[in-house]
Length: 351
Image 1 (cartoon, rainbow, N blue to C red):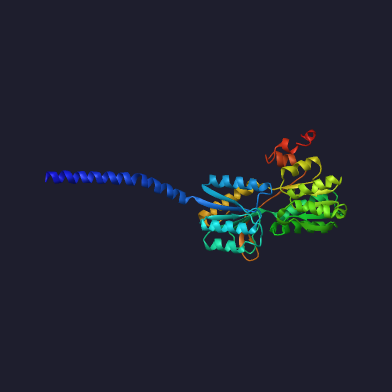
Image 2 (cartoon, rainbow, N blue to C red; image 1 turned 30 degrees about the vertical axis):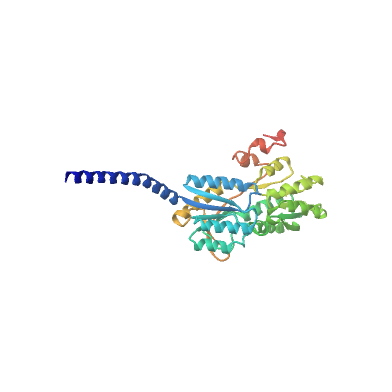
């Protein structure tokens, strides 16, 4: 009996050692795995990074999401709609909580959004609206206001009764029609003749330069050129300079790219539209996390918008007109660009 008792207690002791050694680390791994699974996962598909500002959007969005306990998988479609569709399929396969899309074609992703929704994934259209799709949020700037700012600045600088060329961005970008619609309205009100309208497919700015060379007699008639963004203006102004027309033809753009701000202080671009992308990206990241957690977005800045088929939540940020008169206050004092960079080519004009 005593021998049996010793064997029993030894067996029990060994069994306890095995249980302790197995359960301790295992519980830690399970807890770690649970925390990882609980982390909000966001997939973000960019059109491309050809436009300077998208890198700012990406960096601020990712850092803000990280601060809020989410992780972001960023993909670059390089301007190819089929690649963007594949990226969205990948995000669906990876069971992301939210997919954020900077779309290439506003009319080309309806089916992709539908697949994501069927999988229970929230979808945000960032900066560009996805038409006819049941997205959970559209967040952008007031794009009609952007076109209005371009037009109003030209009129304030003597364009009334004159003529303008419109060299816009991608026709598949829904923002383009919003910007141009308001611009045209103000031009018509002020008897400004639109000599021609051109669109750079996929926002390829070099196409605008090609247009300029191919239509030089028309360019020479224009009092102003409306550029779809500052990247387009970066190809337009050198052509004007080559023909000794830079500074005489009024040029407007948007995005407040560094080179555009340099051209403004140099006198070869009249204005740009500053979009506080840091504010937009932070708000979008907050909304993405809120959608993942609660399935809805709230706030005083949230309104409703009809995108053609569905009524969706919409957050619109206010853009700012930038000219040589307020560039120091808006661009430099805000830290968007450094003073020495803006005035790099004209240091004698630096305040």
